[in-house]
Amino acid sequence: MTYGIGVHWALEFLNENAEISADLLDLRTLLPYDKQAILETAKKTGRVIILHEDTLIGGLASELSAFITENAFEHLDAPVLRCASLDTPVPFIGKLEAEFLPKNRFSEQVFKLLNY
Image (spheres, rainbow, N blue to C red):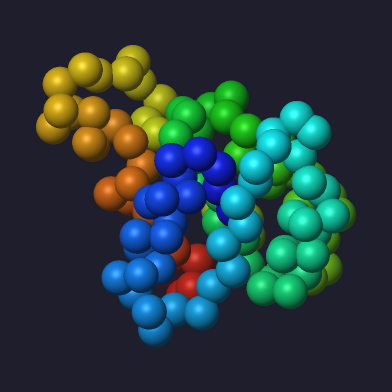
């Protein structure tokens, strides 16, 4: 589950890893978020990773994770994982920004979820 630029990162990852069967839920609105689509996806797949550009602490993924856990826990085969930017000030130098954003850590998190 993701939104914004995360959709492009997730699509890129899935295109590079065609052997992975996954549903990509693009959350087009965040307030309100599509509760029905979120629950349907969680129940169908049994595993959820939430990718977003915001930092981990205080990001929307925390709210979505809580919602999924409270409403679809019995359908999950693994904990809900969050992949987000580092909890640091935003750097403005290209190489540091690339390390700050979650794009490069996303594949590691996906494989962690798949191997749970």
